[in-house]
Length: 198
Image 1 (cartoon, rainbow, N blue to C red):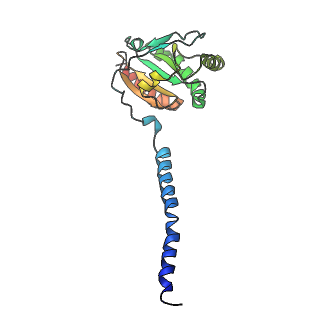
Image 2 (tube, rainbow, N blue to C red):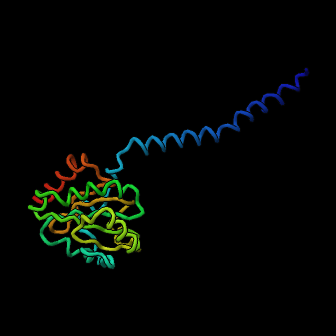
């Protein structure tokens, strides 16, 4: 082996290690992404609307569905707290959340305070909304159809389900991202409704 053979061997070893560098960088970024995804609380995503007035909108009702006359932003400024739930029939977590919403709607203490639960049907066809609520029941005082998703965009909705607590003057007091559980209602939603009603 001559002295001229050594320089050719060293770059080949260096090149073989550099081939794995993009894979290592990808693995590190993927690990960081997964850590942030599962370590964070999605319900704490920031909302620019909390503490501000709901945006102007007018939602029609869901055709052929009783108690689904639609509503406007002015209906959320009637002096009582409103719980606005954004849902869709195609949303699996919305199905899981539905019994919890029914218990909220049936809560006698909330009824006594004048709290209303209203629904926003997000990017959903009327037939599908009717079928969904026909099977699971309709806990909403009224429902607005947001077939194009414009009102949800204005509210800053990331995805469904999301739930907003709105003060009687139309100020967004709280926003919960994801499906509500009974524990979420007891520990978070009910205290936020109480604060909003003061």
